[in-house]
Structures are given as C-alpha cells and as structure tokens.
Amino acid sequence: MQTHSLANVVALISHPGESRIFSLSEARELLPVIRKLTAAASRELDPCQLMMRRLLDCDPRLAPLELEFETIIRKWVERIQRLGVTVSGLWQIGFDTGEGYLCWRYPELRLAYFRGYDESLDSRRRLSEVIQEYQPDWAVC
Image 1 (cartoon, rainbow, N blue to C red):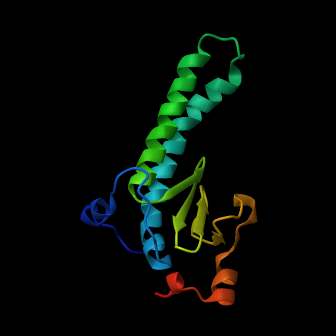
Image 2 (image 1 turned 90 degrees about the vertical axis):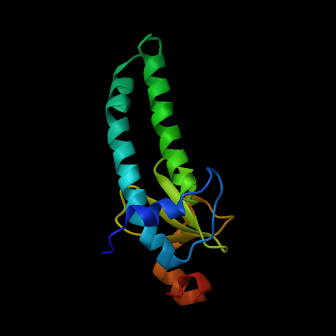
C-alpha cells in the first residue's frame, strides 16, 4: 500500500463542488484518504444518531442534535468535494471517470464497483466486469 504525503493530498484539494476526472489508479491512490475522512465522520456521527433514535419527535433536545447531525454531514461532504470527488449519498462517493463513476461506500475496503451517469446506486456493476467488457481508457495504469 502506498503512503500518502501531506503535500500529495494538499495538491489534490480544489474548490467544493469542483469535480475532476479520475483514472482508476488516481482513484485508488486517493481512496485511503477518503476512507480515513469517512471513518472519522462516521465515528463522530454515531453518538448523535444514537441519541436521536432514543428521543421522541417532540423532545426539545432533538433540534440541537439534528443541527449537530447536519453539521457533521456538511463538513464531510465539503471535505470530500474539495478532493474533486462526487458525493452520491451518506458515506457514498463516486470518482468521475468521464464515462461514469467508480463507486465506493463506507465501509468497503476497496474500489470494486462502477455505474454509468444515468444509473442508480443500486445498479452499480462489478468493476472487474466493466473493465473486462469495455477495456476503458480510465482503467489503463
């Protein structure tokens, strides 16, 4: 596994919402950073979610918890987008290849799925099948 220097990661940071096109090797190189950011945000969110589940909808303690929940998620989304990656859902991201997205969901260990631009998250296909079938340029190392 490659180690990532801070300089390499900082060089990848862009403006929120400014996506970029990734090759498979670039996405794989960035995935450990994404996994670390997502795991940290998930751990931060867990106690908030637990408390929210225990409260009734009319409980006045719910509003500050909802705000905390939203703040944690917004911070995660902004960090992921600053890396040029598309956020598809809670703890779900896509690396734009120019032909679709290399898909990842927390807590998956590696990039293993692909979906086209017009396909839903539920219709993602195994990356190995897509590469074997289409031999896309973005998969060339």
